[in-house]
Image 1 (cartoon, rainbow over the protein chains, first blue to last red):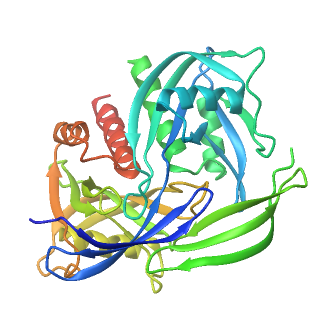
Image 2 (image 1 turned 30 degrees about the horizontal axis):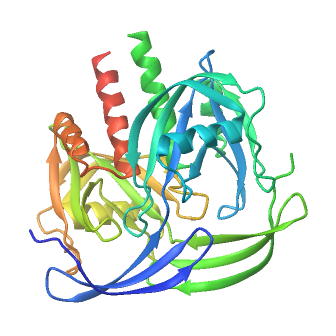
Length: 184
Length: 184
């Protein structure tokens, strides 16, 4: 089957602080044309951080699109001067939680919503967390609260609806697998 | 800690076919103001469909934001006249794969990117698939190819990068857990 959609024209609709929106006219494989609305995003990093005691370190923050607080794994978007995702992940973990991790490994790179969004993010596993004596400061306009929890506590936060985003639900499945594999 | 960001003003930037973009000025807990760019989306459904032989049914389609084909679990956005997600899921499965499922159960509702997107989708488990004799037709401007695979084949599609979106990577973790639990 022929799949490719060739771009006939591209129009920038909005170039904002975070969101860059384009509208493309494309040529479909059947010779017709269609419109694709595409959000361009700089990319992001996220991490699944475990303390030595096996607790996961999460962060609570207000998410305006949902108009309520959400508890998520630590994450942040890539900045223009980020050389590589791992460095960005280390900075985000320290800024948001005041932890540094002894061991980092890359788990997966994924696209949250490829139908209309080019955002890609890399998830790392961060283990052997230690509190940083003099951590990088949080942005003064960021309001983030650290939540450390056991697996059972995380399931309660999911049942309450406060854990509800795709990357954190992915992290909980990952955690369940990890616990099952340790048992085996 | 106080988290709430009160909306001071809302401006519609773009009202497209799929994407509705708003720009809100908000009052932060520290008394300062900030800008939130928010994409409003009608919501979606996705499903993890297993054939009687235990294969997963996926779909390959061109995703313009990535400019290549991606293999994903079947999914679709909610339409204005959708009464409930389950009905939308049944329709999407039939249109995209020509299968109907004997057993449906709701697994999870999740937000792909709550920092700037209000999209919410519900993932269902669909089991006992049977080919529909006279299926709902695919939209003539949709180009979707069905891919049925074993778990090992799915891992190869992931390694090749063609499986790369968050909901399908979630589905693969779910599948791994399901296989482990069947072994136990």
